[in-house]
Amino acid sequence: MHPDDQQTPGAVAVTHTDDGSVVTLRGEVDAALRDEAGLAMAAVIAHGGPVVVDMAEVTFIDSSGLAFVIQLHRLSQEDPTQTCVLRDPPDLVVELLEMVGLGGEIPLTFTPGDSDPREAAAHGLRPFTGSLVTGAIG
Image 1 (cartoon, rainbow, N blue to C red):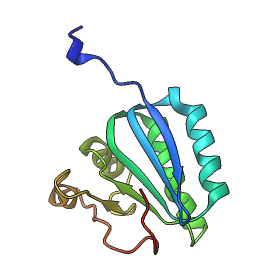
Image 2 (image 1 turned 180 degrees about the horizontal axis):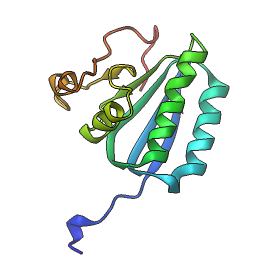
Image 3 (image 1 turned 120 degrees about the horizontal axis):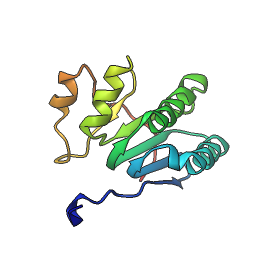
Image 4 (image 1 turned 30 degrees about the vertical axis):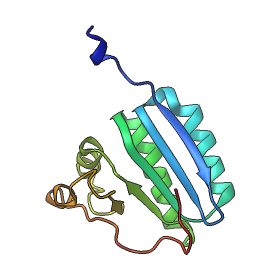
């Protein structure tokens, strides 16, 4: 294996603000992160408020990782104070969301210069343009 081909271990981290939470996913988001994802979900529920899922550093995601993202989104459907937005999702996540029928349902936001929102639009997804909270998250 070439050194550049090494896989990036996955990680889940939660940061809280007065207004909500940022869940940061990095590397390979798969079943190996099940325990971390469970703890992150519990922390988000306990803290309440809007959730931003930062996906800029995701290199791979499997069905269990996608299920975690979908569960975070479902929280926003159950509790009107908990919106959920995916920030800078890589193309692989956008394509998987479309494949499972959630294209256009989960709001997306892109950091200027990181991704082209027109690519997401080509997949039927819409960038998030609303306001999440009165203060800044992440």
